[in-house]
Figure 1 (cartoon, rainbow, N blue to C red):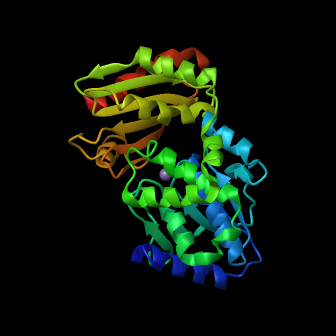
Figure 2: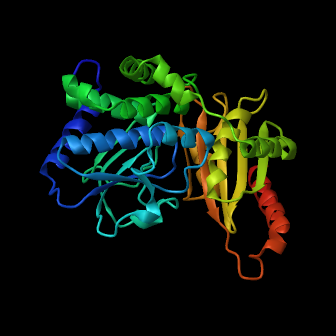
Figure 3: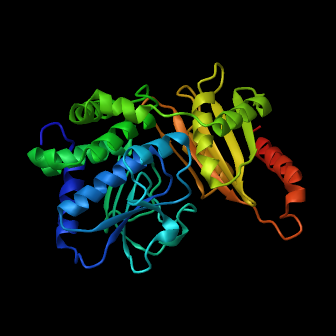
Length: 350
Ligand SMILES: [Mn+2]
C-alpha cells in the first residue's frame, strides 16, 4: 500500500503467513510488559489481526493497571474481561506476541523467558529475540501503535472498516500519549494519528482524554517535587515507598513532567514498589549530551533500558531487586532502606 515503509510491509506479510499457517487449537498470548495506552492499543489491534487470520489471542499485562488514565480507558471500553494480569495466563500457552517491548528476559514478565515468540512489534531498542526465527519489527518511531496502525493499513487495506472503535481509539490515544501530546511525534506518528482520528472522530478521542486525576497521584507528585535534589543538570526525585505496583505508573508521569524543567537534562524518579523492588523512571532532554539507553545500562545493568524519541529526548527506566536478608527486610528499616537507595542512586550519577 502507498506510503507504508517496506520494513512494515515485509513484517506484515511475514506475520500474516505465520498466523495463517499456525495450528489454531491453542491460544496465543499477547503480552504487555508495562501497561500504558500505547501498549494497550497495540495489543488490542494485534488481537484483532490474530482473529482476522483465524487465531484466538488473549492479552496479558505485567505489573498493574496503574495510573488514572489507564483506569479511565479500561472503563470507557470495558476492557477488564479481555485484558488480564499475566499471573492469570493459562499454563498451556506456548506461543506469544510482544508489543511495545522486545525482550524475553524481562523482569516485568518473569514467566515468558522460555516461551516461543511469534512476533515482536516495538519501538524500544535492545531486543533479545532472534529476528531470523520471529517476525521482528522494531523502528524508532514515537509509538508502537504507529507501527501497528501502518501494518493494519497494509494488511487489511479497504477491509479495515470492520474494526471496532475501541481498537482505533486506543491506538490513537496510544500515539498521543507516547509522543507527549504529539510534541515529539515524527511524520509517521502524525500520519497514523490523523488516520485514526479520521476513523473515530474528535468527540470520541476527547472522551478518551478526559479523565480525572486521583489525589494519590497529586500527593506522589508533590512528594517528588518536595524531595527532589538537583545537581548540575541532573534531577533526582524520590517518591518513597508506594502502596504497591498500582501507583508505579505515577513514576513515568512525574518524570515526563519534570524533564521539561529549565536547565535539566536528566531526571530520575524512583520509588520502592515492593519491599525489595526499586523502580526507576528516567527521562533525558533532547539536548542531553549522552545516550540515555547507554547511560542506564552502564549504571543499572541488564534490567535497564531506554528508547530515543523522534525529537531526541530519551525515555526509559530500570528495575532493581535489592538483595535483602530477613534482618533488613522489614517495616522498621524502611526509612533506612530508602536513604540507602537514595545515596546509591546519587553516587552512581554524580
Ligand atoms: Mn510505547
